Image (tube, rainbow, N blue to C red; front, side, top):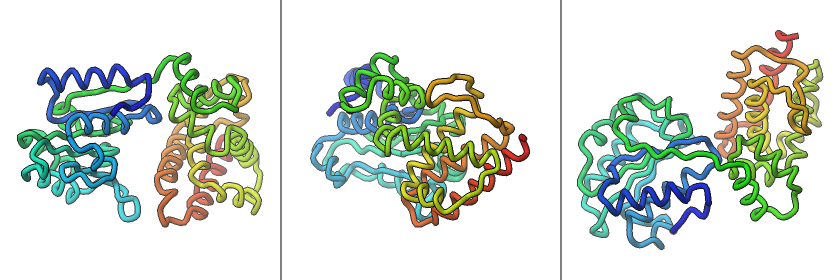
Amino acid sequence: MSTGLPWLTENEAELQHRLDTGQLAHALLIDGPSGLGKARLARTLVNMLLPAHELLAAGTHPDYFQVAVDEEAHSAILIDQIRALSEALILSAGMGGARVGLILDAHRMNRNASNALLKTLEEPPDNAWLVLITDQPNRLPATVRSRCQRVSVHAPDAEMGLAWLREQMMSPSDHELQLALSLSANAPLAALALLEDNGLAFGQAVRDDLIALSEGGVVDDDLLSRWMSAPETVWRWLALWLAQLATASTQTSDLHKAWPIQPKAGPIQNLWAQALEGTRLSDTSVRQDLLLQRWVLAWQQACAQAR
């Protein structure tokens, strides 16, 4: 099984080589910006390590264990989850081969969970592998990072990213594809998500709303209705625009116009982090209307302080 992503071909070949030559560590850290397919690469590695790929595809493989944040109940990966994973890796393999544990968003382990994982990293069970994925490696304790074999994923060059996007979507123009790539730091999967989630026009509308609010506009029912029609998409665009605003971009293309008001760096960072959190909570039972209203209030306050 391959990721099917051309910019990951070298990563896949390197992992296969390490496995074939006995150089694959029992703990790996796959890191890199979001939107590049790190989870696909990790699952390709899992397929290299475990037989019965049909069971993996169905999510019923007895020797594969996945840990992620339970967004409905918590904001972090907890110690009990890591302890359960470690205990599972110690048991005999159900199919007589390897056992593999995958930790998504590993940087979201709380301190106790990270400390619990260290015990497994220091004394890995025989024929067991741990794979950690993160787009924020610096949030992981140095003690965890140092015990993992690093696999860094990088964005492709603009030509490769554009060619891949053309294969995925026939209707957008090259201009639109290039804009999506530019807004996504050349991460093709992130660019594809922008194009699919109501398109660039929707993102431009969110930007226009932000500018109007920054200049003293009111939060009316029309704005909330439009934002609540696709909250996950809105949160993604809010995070993107705040990231761009943080760079004080002076470009003047369609989606890179200068911002009329420049809030201070601290509030921008906080608003960006809240938008990322909103994205994570968008498919949970958390009230999106309340989260968005709170975010808008914080945005208006930050802009008022900058005027």
